[in-house]
Length: 471
Image 1 (tube, rainbow, N blue to C red):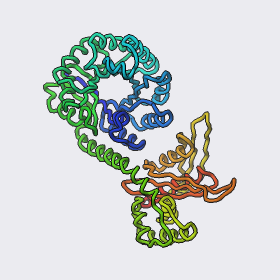
Image 2: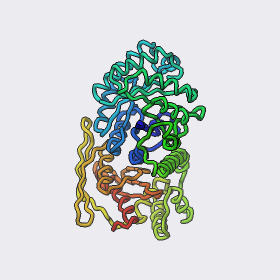
Image 3: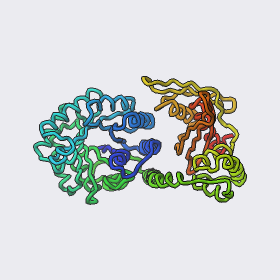
Image 4: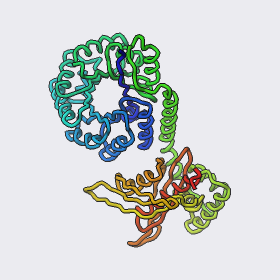
C-alpha cells in the first residue's frame, strides 16, 4: 500500500524570511486560499516579529484556511513567543507550532550564541512549551548537512522526548547530493519512532532539490517542503509530477489536486509577479508623485496625463469634470499636487448610484480591547449586518464592509485630512481600491474620522458594484 506524503508549501514563509519578493497582506491571504484549495497538506508562514501586524496576518490566515494545516514557527529569541504565537494560531482548524533551530556548529554560534549543550536544552524547553499547547509540534533542524552526527541525534532525541510530532531536517547549505540525502534520511527514519513524521527541506543551490526530495521519499520521509513560486527549494509542480509518474518506484502519493495544479501555479506566479513589480515600482512612483506640481496654467491634456499616471482611466465626461474642479482649486491655491489631484478624481469622477447604503455603524475601541465595528448596510430592501474585529477602528470597519459585500479588495491608498478648522473640523477621507487591475476611488466627509473613512470606502465599493452590473 502506497504511503501518503504531506506536501508543505513555504512560499509565504520564504518571502518573509528572504524578502525575495515582497507580498502584501492581502496577497498572502489570497495565496493561502489558493494553496488550501489546491490540496496542500501544510501552509507555512514566518514567525511573529512585528507584533500586531504579524498576529493580524496569522489570525486572517486562520480564517482563510479551511483544510490545510497552518504552521507558524516560534521566535527562539523571545521568551513570550510561544504563548503569543499560540494565541494568534489557536483558532485554526489544524494548527501547528514549529521550533526551528540550527544544528551545525557555525550556525549555532552565529544565530543562537549558545554552546551545544545549551542548544539541546533550548530545543527541549521550547518543544515542551509548544506541546503543552498544541498537539502538532514540528522541530526543524537547520543546516543538518554540516552538523556533527552525535549532536544531531541527541538534539532530535530531545525534541521527540519533549513532544515533537514531526522532525524535519533542512539542508540549509544546499550542498547534499541525492544519494547523501537518501542515506541520511534512511538512518533517521530508523532512529526515530514510527509515530513521529520525518520531513525534509531541500535547498536548491545546486539545482538538485527536486531530486533530493524524491530520494528522501524513497528513504522514508513523510513530509516535503515545497514552493509554487520561488526557485530556492523544491518545486511543488515538479515534485508532485515525479511522484505521480513514478509511483511504481516511490510507492507514495499526495493529496495535491493534479488536475488543477498547472492552473493554480500559473495564477500564483501571476499574483506574485504582479506584487513584486508593484513593490519595486512603488518607491520610485512615490518620489515622482511628490514632485508633481500643477498650476492654473496647465491645460487639460497635461492634467489628464498626470491622472493617468496615478492609475485612473477616465471617460471623456469625467475628464472634463476633473479639469473644471482642478481649475477652481488651482486658482485659489496656486498649485495642485498629486494627492490633491487624487482627491479631485475621487470627489467628481464617476459617481455611481449606491448599491450599498450605510444604515448605521457602532465602533468599540480602546487600549485594552480589540477594535470592533458593528455595521449595517442596506442593499435594495435587504438589511445586511456584520460585526468584525480589526487592527484599529478603521480596519475593523473596512473588514465589516468587505464581509457584507462578499469581496476582498486591495487597499491601494488611504488618506485622511482636515478640510475645516476648529474642534468640530470636518475630516475628508480618500480611499483607492484596486480591483481586477483597475483603480476605484471614493471620498467621504464627516466630523467623525471613522465615518468619513466608511463613506469613502463605500463610495469606491459602489463604483465597483456598478461596473459589475449589480444594480
